[in-house]
Image (cartoon, rainbow, N blue to C red; front, side, top):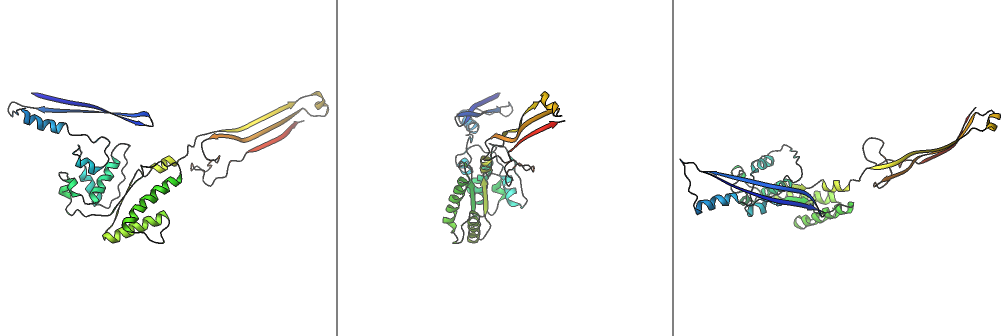
Length: 286
């Protein structure tokens, strides 16, 4: 006998009022009952089977603690978490959007905070023996719109203020970098061990601050008129051309100014504005 159960659900993501992504989840569960090992699908067994099949999917959940406490379906990758945390080898994790980067950082946060109860039944529960607690600084840069440099300064300052309320603040710490270094040092001294810094969506301020470098430039324009009158020939002149031209007359762009990078870096920092030139002249052919 073959028992087949399938579930199809749609999750439509919208951004700024327009549909940008539609994800289709398709799940099929096969339960095979063979004659030599018969399983009776009475109400009790059927309930156990359906409980496993109908386990909640963690759609939109990016917090490990919420996922575990809510008994959502979770693919156990905690062995890799333990391996990364237990070695001093640098790791570069390149993953596209919606691939669980925030959930991974949340998992690291729960692990370094020593929340052993959240990892019961997972691979890391048998691998980790000490479950030490570390000060964790989790900075999430996804909760702000970075339409100006001040927006980034404000969110960093607010987060530093929260940490300083817990670990203290030095009187001579004024800059963001100085305050961050100070709070890390004090947290390490108070815990008598290292600290953990987790930064989520670190590239969002960079992506929102980048200018659209597209532009359309009116590079060169020239107007001229050639005189070929008989009286010019009497003066020994075959032709006479009067001209007016201009360079870099106008540029259509969303960039803050009209500077072009001529040294191949793609940035206008340090470059002078492109010079606009006009030339008026006469060209005589004898």
